[in-house]
Length: 325
Image 1: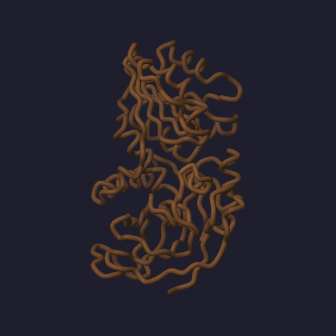
Image 2: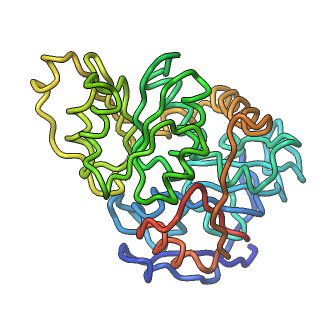
Image 3: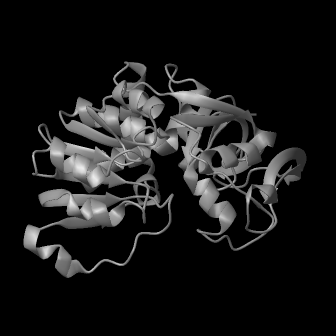
């Protein structure tokens, strides 16, 4: 056993329940590796795990769903990886730690063009953008897209990628600084939702037609109004709930305009290693060639995770955030 430090919670609650404390990491078993983290990603799902919005079964629990680092040891029956390989992963809880044991089939080998920090900041958010744009509703040239929370980590990637695919991009943001950031990353029409009614703004910008698709990570504050501003046969793609769970939906409301509503979940799109690795190669290739500019706008020491959570929940962050380990 090796003693490390990790952020662990012993109960659900506010940022104060996160403790920087000693933990033990054992040797990897069959099909596993021991990974030394070099960078860890911050995502809103971490807040949901901490608060119990997505309840955890066992305590104490090391939270965190994304990380990057270097393989230190291989267990039996591991193929395709070697000690010293740089890798990233997502959707495996336990990343808020200096080191961990993890199944090798959940790892993505990082190419030379992708630094560890990019791997930790972009694997979860970037693969989320991939399945939203390429799977749940595949964006087509000429589509009009609304990105809720356009200045966030996933939001900035969505804006750039949708623009790359030929869409006109609208996006909601909380202030002028975030509007400028979104505009610099592919958002044609930033909408300051605190200053104007975003529904009215969308209909004005689209000449009353509405948008073809909405990518919504906000939830209760935006879902109903979003349904109202979809074009005929439009798509509401819900993939988060930063403001709270979406309200119940009367499906009869969808019929007159032929609307479609779907709910995303990244875990479904990263279970298969070959599929996940191909999608990651596309994502990191677009980052490496400059098509997608990844904005790591906040960095914290891992021991300061409580402060990072407070800033995230207060909507003080933009782009991506990483913990330095």
